[in-house]
Each structure stands twice: as structure tokens, then as C-alpha cells.
Image 1 (cartoon, one colour):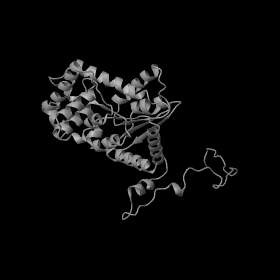
Image 2: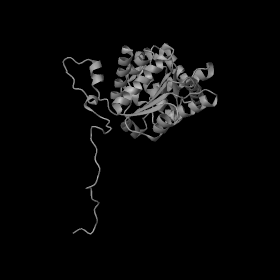
Image 3: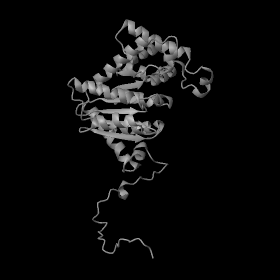
Image 4: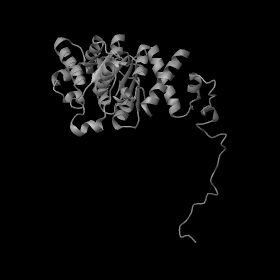
Length: 319
């Protein structure tokens, strides 16, 4: 005999599953594809209409709707987006008029420049850090730092614009896969947001703190100018930046609102391999509270970003 009392279930009331509210039925399930006849549209339609599958569809609808209303779609990105080969996908979205502003951290700009000019990037840090060679590629530092110094003294250009113009002026061999050059050529704002001391070009003799700081400050104001249009629509995508761009975005949004621009009623989405505190708060939750909607998607960029782009293009072709 147990010394503990048990509550009897004999008088528990039950109800019919037919009258119960349920969230999933077979019509929402994934669909099996015929590998011999399936098209892209078939694949996209085959994704389950449950949880993140539906949220991704909702985000795509927000993006398509925003561009129909001529509201901005701002894509913010970290360095990993370039390192895993997503530049052609981003450029395609810019060319199609989907993305209206690209903002990147300065590590992404480094990878973009190295790819555009020399066709290689992403050095082996674990090997090169052993003897102090990590981040000491002379060509990279001279290209970026000298471009910033020149723009600092000669013009009112921002960080992204200065690099883009130099890539194009020197006819970088791989400039067609440069996000910086492509945006500039298409007249789409491209901004670079640096934190001094975080990137390899900051440790080289050509580094000029005043030029770097001023040009990234100009780009902060260019981003704020784009953000002011996020009223009654628009989308902000943060892809792979865990700290810099979530912080920059929150401050630029505050500036826009402080100056009297409504900047609310838009959607935001964070894409990354794991969930971090700052993107969740500064991208997904805080900017959209009371007005708008925030999304969070977890997955590898080299899978999620082509999927998102394909869904956007498929949705626009139906509209």
C-alpha cells in the first residue's frame, strides 16, 4: 500500500476531438515530390504549412507587399554571408528591385573587396595566428584604408560608396560578384558599419582611425535616411550579424523616430545559425512592438538565403 494519495480520474469530463480546436491537419503536411517532374514552384509548395514554414511564407508576403507599396526592404548582413557564397543571390535581389538598401559590417566589406579584386578570401586564421601573420594581407589593408583616407579628404562619400567606386575604377576582376560594386552601379545605397579594432585592416600601418570613423559615421546617417521610410510597411532583414548591425539599426531607428518620422508598422526578420540575444531584442522584438511583426529563422545561410530568394521571386511572378 502506498502512503501517498492519488487523485481519481473517474469523473474527469472528456469532449469530442471533432469539436476540439486543432492546429494541424493533413492538408498542412509536406508534399512528396516527383523527382522526374518537379519544378521550383512544386518544391516551394511542398513545404509544410506549419510553424516556420508558414512564417517564412508570411515574411515573403510582407516583402512582396512592401515593394508593391514602394516601401524599403533593407538587408543587413554579416561577413559569413559573403564567405558562404551568397553574394550572387543578394545581388540578384538588388537587381530585381527587391532589396533597396544593403548594410554590412566591415568584415563583410573586407570579404567583398578581397573577392572582387583577387578572387579569394577567408584566410585560415588558426594557422596564420600562430606567428602573427593573421590579418596582415598588405593588399587588403592598403586597398580599404587608402580608399577611406582619400574619401575622407576629397569628398562626402561614405564607407561603402568609397570602396565600391574603387573596385569599379580599378576594374576588379571579379567585380560582378561584388555586392558593394553592384549596389553602387545600380544606384542602391550600400553602407558599411565598422567598430574600430574588430577587423584586420585596423591592425595595419595604413589604418587611419579618423577616416574610418568619419566614413562609417556617414554611412550610419545614410542608413538612418533609409530607415525613415519604414512607415506603414517595409521590411528589415538581418542576416548573420550578431552584434554590430542589431545595435546600429536600433540607434538609427531611434534617430529617425526622434526626428519625427513615424518609422513603425514594418516587419523585421533575423536569420542566423543560432539565436543570439541582440538580434532577438534589437531586430525581432523591440522595433516592432505595438506596430509590425518580427520573425526569427534559424538555419545555415547557404540554405536559408537561397530558399528565401526563391520564394520571393516565385511569389512576385504570381502577383
